[in-house]
Image (cartoon, rainbow, N blue to C red; front, side, top):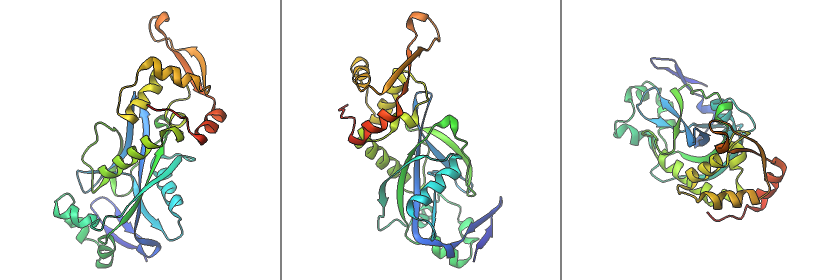
Amino acid sequence: MINKTRSKTEDIEFDIDNLIPGNSVDCVIFGFENQQLKILLLKWKFSNLWTLPGGFIYKTDDMDSAARRILEERTNLENIFLNQFHTFGNMNRNLLHKAFNEKKLDKNIFYSLDEETRKWISSRFITTGYFAFIDIKSSSPKPDYLSEKCEWFSIDELPNLVYDHNDIIKKALDYIRIQLNYLPVSINLLPHKFTMQQLQKLYEDILKKKLERSNFQRKMLKLGIFIRMEKEYTGSANKAPYLYCIDKPKYIELIKNGIGFTY
């Protein structure tokens, strides 16, 4: 059975008979552009708030495949690096009621649904958080049927978010900082050719701290995973920085055991 209700824009469908009740997936999708670490967000049609890409879990899904389906639908990319990092299950995580009580969502949308669907989506939901690293320039973000926009935001300039999604983002960043030496950050977030300055800015955005340039570059180049290429000529020739690319086999092998840096 598919329960359908019509909003002002299009049908909203909740196929509740084929979904696992009380469980969802939320994805923190990271990209790096214009020297900024960014996160992909959706703006709902019936609210001024933004949300992480997420969704329900079909009974035919396992958790990872549900997260990967959501990622591929939102970014139009396949073979994305994906990592589960935390489950959010606060006993008061009845998110719709909280949002309505705080007047952050339009109640008319909720009450236009049939009673069975209202009860289903009003229950306590436990969500599993995943994060992903993607190349922004290769992606084609698109909103889901509940959203009107799908845009990238700097992690330092996030809009107002629904529910506990600020907490989910913070938890993802905390996890990445702890596991940074074991995660394929550079190879997934940087362009194929990049400067040492871009690499350093990526690490600084993740760690939220300034790094000493000569020390950072010395440690990175000592790893033997960065291949020096031609210079990037954008102005004076004697100031042009070298471009680098990553030796992928060496890089993947290195992070298996951890890079071993302290930052």
